[in-house]
Image 1: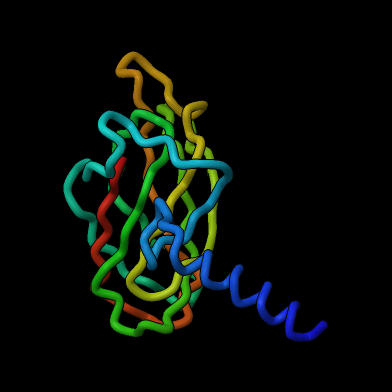
Image 2 (image 1 turned 120 degrees about the vertical axis):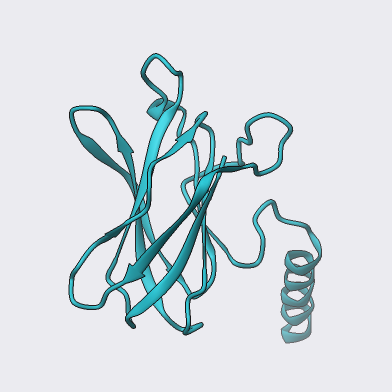
Length: 151
């Protein structure tokens, strides 16, 4: 009986390793279901990079605002000095009168967060959502983090 359970466990593990995923190894996905790429089904960088500092004292840091067509939105951080530095990212949709927190989650080190199913955030005359990211609750201070956004 143990041999059968071990074989089943091994087969499931092997399937998880072999079947490709839409997210890369360093992606943390926030949301549900399958990705909804805009255009040709691949990530396209939007805007120019932001540069933020990760704080441990409760201070918030913010990226610049990026435009999105909805669907899925990916935020990637690089330049994080410690691979074990875990911090929270909060995606906001910025309207002219107020900003609304859409989703949040924790990432570690140089990684990406994917926010899914964001079609409801698209508004305004340009037909796009205006997103920015708040960074807080870092384990370690880091003054040199680059943020890139993809739609």
